[in-house]
Length: 134
Image 1 (cartoon, rainbow, N blue to C red):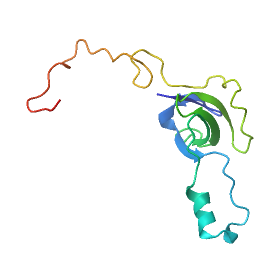
Image 2 (tube, rainbow, N blue to C red):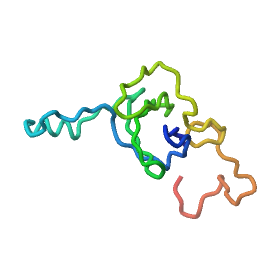
Image 3 (cartoon, helix red, strand yellow):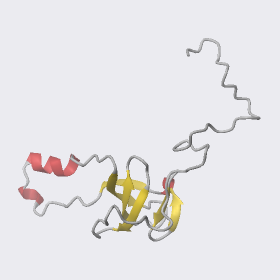
Image 4 (cartoon, rainbow, N blue to C red):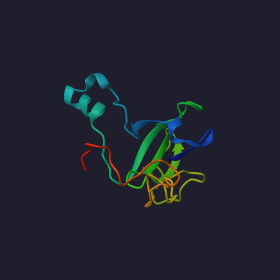
């Protein structure tokens, strides 16, 4: 689970936010002068970066404000959060204070290596129901 630091509300759970796509995609100056190919490239073609990527996010259940985030698409590490309309910060810069990342707990489903503790439950990993395939 990510903790995202909203510039207005502070750290919140990722379920309060909606992804808004790639940041810093300029709107065409005169959209009526674009041909079909240029218009479709503006609407649908986006970078698919592996690594640091600038994204737009909306705090949909909080302040309802848009902001930009620099996030590593491989590790989910949030490197910077900055206002809409601002220039992209250097990706080598220090992370913003109170920025979130995936859980580092040993039983984490995102980054941990150990499975959750199921002792005391009725879950038995050694047996499968009759007719189940392995």
